[in-house]
Image 1 (cartoon, rainbow, N blue to C red):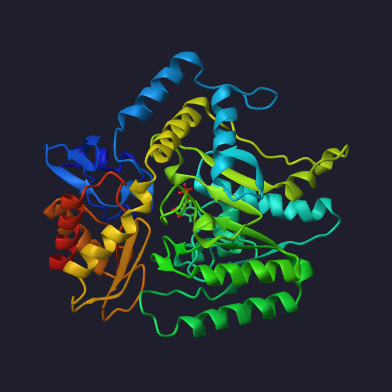
Image 2: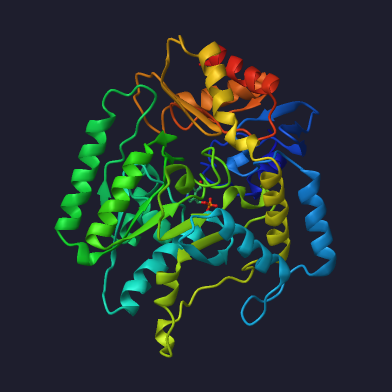
Length: 430
Ligand SMILES: Cc1ncc(COP(=O)(O)O)c(C=O)c1O
């Protein structure tokens, strides 16, 4: 590569990338449905919905049209003292699908910030009530984003060691990660609940909230837990009077086979964080929704009890219009997400059930995952990941293992033939 090319390659400092030896990124010309078209006109199947956002596939015309129409009316307006129809409509629509105890919508623009807002709300809720509770409980393997607060509660992940001196301290509990026919799941849940109980017994008065990725820990390796566990955590929260935050940034909008993991598990959190699929992958937007109890805790003539948080692009009208169009699509045909788990299971049975290296196979809603048995053990930094990623691209699939965890999280429009091809590629490559 010439120095000019190298200079060009390095002009953009890329996310989560060691730039010293980074390969030049693939240039994408366009997207259409499940396909991405590369510079050389080669098409690859986006089996991970591009960082888990494009739930309807790429360039969905209904969403593109909604954004264009909105752009001709109102592209952006300050959201303090002003409002607009797309935000009002979206809030109303979201509340019809979120757990029924959640009554208030706070907008921001990415998943990390939705979590940051939930943490600040939980902390200040108690402070406004005269209690200083500055600790949170989170789970080993959890990923909640890369702002300071979301990194703090993500200290169970290997990413944030560098930033440790900047983070607030938390309590960590084991996540009872499970898979199909797991003989030890009861014991794992018992240990996790035991640890939670110990922490709460040791000082629930210091704990503002428990924060969990419900049903599936995403970046931590598509680790599943059972609905029963979430129910038990909810019970502990009630017993010890601490808040429960569900980080549904990844699991929201059908990913677990229902609108939200909270709905599938039938558990009501006090706060929920959603983003990623909200606009169908068109524009950045996120929401932190909360119960009336939390909202009411901020109502006061005392200025210091106000929730001082907001961003320049809060509730951007284009993003809200995209989200409404995306919800229209989901409401029109929810079977695209309710019906995908059985499709996954059928192909797993056909192509992977006797696979010699793929263990701990599991499917939940629109997601399939398994571990590749490896001498290096289970780790995000397992050297198998970049090798496999390259091989999949060569075969025409965007499949990006998380360490030795292989997974599929395709757009909901993927048809059976393409989904089966992805399974065949996994069977051959792993
Ligand atoms: C569960 C969860 N929470 C929060 C985030 C952070 O979202 P964002 O990357 O939009 O800031 C992610 C991102 O992967 C996530 O999976």
